[in-house]
Image 1 (cartoon, rainbow, N blue to C red):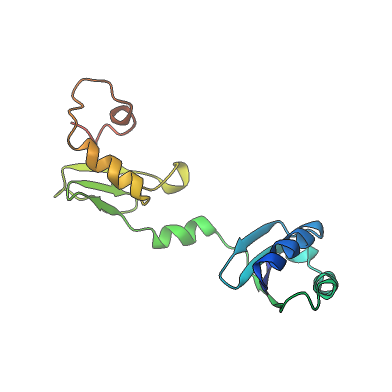
Image 2: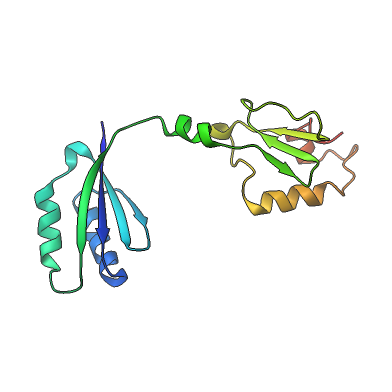
Length: 154
């Protein structure tokens, strides 16, 4: 099944009301943007009449524009993985997925399967934590990070 993306341009105070109204007719995902928001609904639940009725209720309370498009269902994990780039932290640590080549020129290699993990290492706190860990002696201390990624610490 495909989805409908409803793109709404509206002032912030009115956008919040429209989100609540659209949720009442089956929209289940919302994404804010600079101009307003996008709302998503399964294609078989989409009703242009419902949208027009909601928008008409608030006519004159602010400038509102809207349109929609069909989004074809796809494997979002596969799409994301195609664009997932490995990281190099502090010129010593490689953080990569199994489908990336290893970096034997770096001292440490962390392999994360993106869909099976909490994160991918791309958040700034991950880089800070890994950089900090380079200065810690983990030899023989049973560190949880060492247990989770034995290839990382000697």
